[in-house]
Image 1 (tube, rainbow, N blue to C red):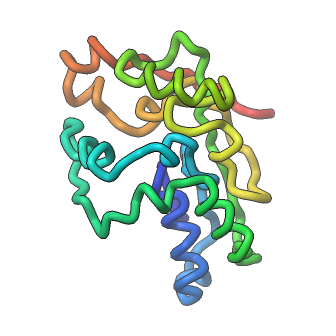
Image 2: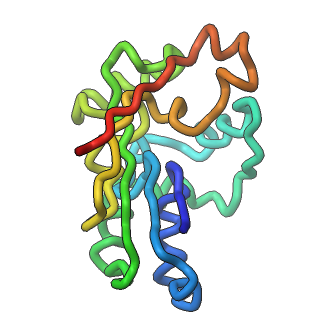
Length: 174
């Protein structure tokens, strides 16, 4: 099973298409708050802004090839999805972060507000429908902002967590 969080979800999907030899060893692919359809925030973002994320406690990412912003633009993601049908024979699942506004961590409220101009149903980084793998089974809506799902800031840095991070709640889909 491959699980892709945030930018990892489109990276996993691209790997499935580019490396067909891995498919036989997989049963399922899961998007966890995945940027499958991109984010409107990327339309206005610059690489230096993304590079700031390297300073988030526990981050180990580098700048890479500099194409991350372009790859997260909705037009880029939607064009890629249109040109690259997902391989059949695998199960696809999506976990969507879709918090109530009071569950947005204070450090992410400005990006939540900016995305709310497009759609208020967002997790501060992605609109809920852009987190879905096309044709996937929806596993859950999580009442948490984008970082609260997978970035353990509150657990690993309690002081920062107490100031800026909200707790998440899971609402399983029946």
